[in-house]
Length: 82
Image 1 (cartoon, one colour):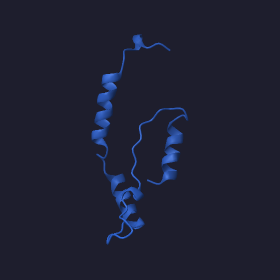
Image 2: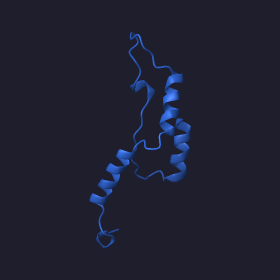
Image 3: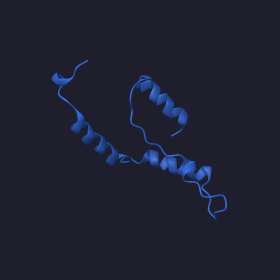
Image 4: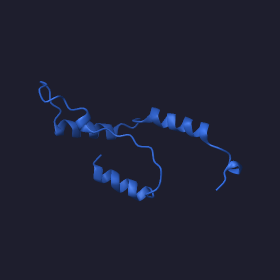
């Protein structure tokens, strides 16, 4: 996903002060060292990004962890003071 697309989605669906949970991966975290015999090209990273975007169950375990945490931390409405 392009950064510009992510920013657009975030702005359309959230207020600036909303709390969100975010994970992301950037190419530079996976680049090989300059003197390595291998290189991760921009084209290869784009291909990886596209494959990830098509992966329907990506993040499923993380989503399950969040759902479990929500269940554990949620409180009944009558206990909430505003």
